[in-house]
Length: 214
Ligand code: PRP
Image 1: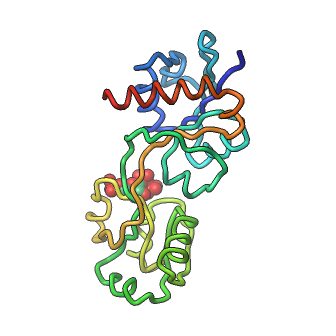
Image 2: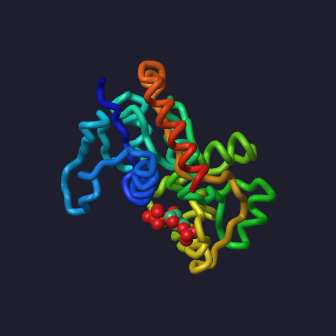
């Protein structure tokens, strides 16, 4: 039996995913040691390997088959646009991708004005404005703290993740349009899905059953 490799998006998603996996017998004790500098963890008995990666890299590892299975947010899946199968919604990490800005930007959106849109998600922003709204905009890629952009005058609006809404509120911004709901997803390499179908389908089945019982 060959190893099946999991790529987990570092942080909250990985922690939550491992908690869920544990409920149906997929464990990795080594990974629980928070001080470890190890990058790859093995469960010899189940022939499984796990590694943590930056969220944006998870779809890349999975598309190339360096990982058979990935756990990553829908935002990253949409932004990266990699060839892979999305097989399960884990139901946690729930939030929304939204167009946000000050109240005054509402009108600019309604009138389809040429505006600047700052985002960590330039592909999602472009797809939304060009293909769904048919509005020509200038997209500006940022790497974080995107809420700053409309405050300091870099852009009129932002496309960003809204979870509780408190970052927006504390900065005098609001949701202007909702693009799509987001949550953690399981993705699978397209070749692995064929070659290791039985094992992977069993994992998906166990995962879905466990999620339903939670
Ligand atoms: C995310 C997102 C928002 C915030 C939304 O940022 O980009 O800024 O969380 O959460 P809220 O609606 O609960 O306030 P993150 O903390 O990941 O950091 P970043 O700004 O560096 O991207």
